[in-house]
Amino acid sequence: MTTPKTPSKLDRVLAEQRDYIAKRETGYRERALKLYPHVCGRCTREFAGKNLRELTVHHRDHNHDNNPSDGSNWELLCVYCHDEEHTKFESLIRYSSVKSKEIAPATYNPFADLKAKLENK
Image 1: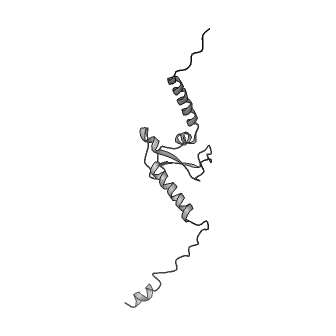
Image 2: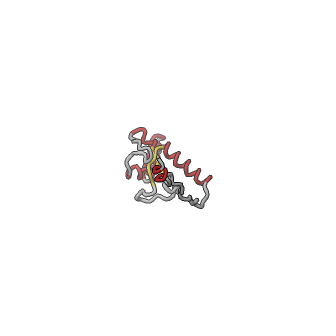
Image 3: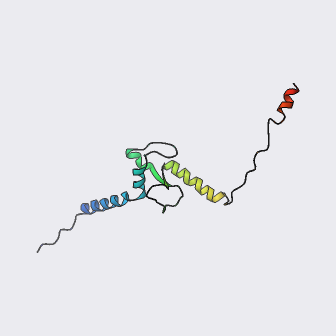
C-alpha cells in the first residue's frame, strides 16, 4: 500500500501564489489597469514595468465597495496624487460645513466713472 505523496513546501507556495494572482486579477485594480491607459489622471505621468506598482486606483466617490464593471467610479492616480486627493477629501470633511456658502457677486466696477475722468483731461 502506497501513501499519497504530500506536496513539498515549494509546491504549496507556488499553488498559493497562483491562487492569489488569480484572485487579484478579478479585483478592481487589475480590471482598472486593463480598462485605462497607465497614466496618472492628475499629473499625467506614464507608468510601465517596475514603476506600475506606483499607479493606484482611486474611487471617485471614496466608496471602496462601489466597483461598477464599467470602471466609472475609478481613476488611476500615482501614489503622490492619490495621497493628495485623499488629503483634500479629509480636509473637506474635517473643516467644511455641509451647507454650501452663497458668495455674493462682485459689485465693484473699476470703470464706472471712466468716461467722466477722460472728459476732464
